[in-house]
Image 1 (cartoon, each protein chain N blue to C red):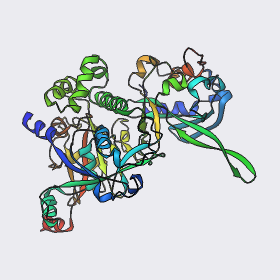
Image 2: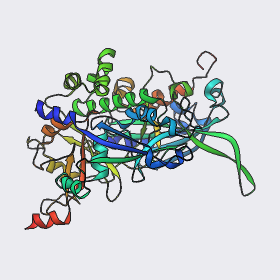
Image 3: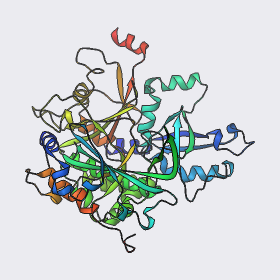
Image 4: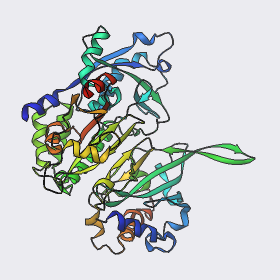
Length: 196
Length: 297
C-alpha cells in the first residue's frame, strides 16, 4: 500500500523518459499529460507487433492505447486504466489535411487483444471515478477517500486488490516497481500466432 | 435481523418496458408493445435483458444482429439512461426520488393501486456517457459483480482474501443465488465475508440533484471515541450542504424503498440493508415543501 500523499509525490517525480519501467513504452508515447496532481495519462501509438491476428477488429484497426495512472482510495494503491481507440479507415477532412476518425473500442477480451497474460492481473470494464477535491483530514482513507462517480466514459480497469503482494511493501520507488509490473511486464509481449 | 433481511431480499418493483419507436418494425404502434415484469430490487436490470428481448424480438427491426451485437441495448427512465451496474432497487430509489411516505398518495391520485416504473428500451452503437458497455453478456455482469464484492471485502476487512479464496463452486453458487433468488445461500456465503467488526463500511450514496452523481465514501465503523458511527455522522461529513447539525434536514435517506432514521448506527444498517453487490446503497430524496412546513411547526 502507498498513502495518497506519497503516491502524489512519487507521481510528480516520475519521469517516464528516464524510468527503466517505461523503456519499452517510450518509443510509442504520443502524449504524456499530467491531468491533475494524482493522474497521469499516456497516449500511445499501438505497436505493430500487437496488431497481428485477431487484434484487428474486423475492418477496423487498433491505433491508440490510452493508459491512465490514477490512485485507488479504496485499495490505497496506484491504479491502471486502459482505453483503446480504433479507426475504420474513413478519413475526415480537417482544413485540407486528411485525418483518420477514431472511435473508442471495447473488445470482449482485453487480455487477448493486448496479449496480457490472464494470470497477471484481472481487468474489468468500469467507470473511472474522480476523487473528491475537498480534504478535511490527513487520514487518507477517511473523507478524502470519497469517490464521486459522474458521467464519464468506461475504461478497462486493472484490479488493485493484491498489488502490495505483487509489488512488495518497501515504499521507496513503489510507483516505479508498480509500473514495471502493471505496464512494462505486458507491453513488451509480442503477439505470435500461438497467442493470437 | 434475519426477518428484516428476508423482507429486503424479497423486495421487487413492478416494471413496464416500452420500446423506443425507432426500434420497432414499421406499422407497429409503440403503445401495443410493452413487457410487464417484476424485477427484484436486489438484482441487476441487465440480468433480465434476454427475457425482455425474447418477448419483444418479433416487433423489433431486423437489422439488429442479436448474435453479434455491434451496439448495446440500454434502458432509460424519462430519457435518462439507467446505469445497469447498480442494483435495480437503488436505481429506482434515486431516479424516481419519491418520498416513501407520499408514494401511496401519488398512486391514489393516478387511480392506480399498483406502483409501476415505466422504462424505455433503447439500442445504439454508441454508448450513453457513463454507461459500461456490455461486451461479454452475462459473464461480464457476473465478473463486474464479483469485482464489487472484492472491493467491498477490502473495505470491510482490509484485504480481498475472503472473496479470492472462495472456491469456484462457492463463487458460482453465490452468483446463482442472486439469479435464482436463493436468500439462504446468498447470506450463507456473504456472512463468510462480512466480519462482525469491520474496518470500514462499503457505501454508495446516490444523488440526483443538482446532477446525477454517486459518492462512494469510506466510512469508519466507529468514531474516534469508539462510538458506532451513525447515518447522521456520515451524512454531516459527506453532504454538509444538505445535512447540518442546526438546520432541519431538507432531504431524507431511502434504502430499499424505506426511509432510514438518521440515528441508526451505520453498520447495523449495513448488516440489514446491504445490496447484492455488498454495498449499502443510500438514495437522497428531497423533502416536500409541505413536509418541511410540518417539521418546522
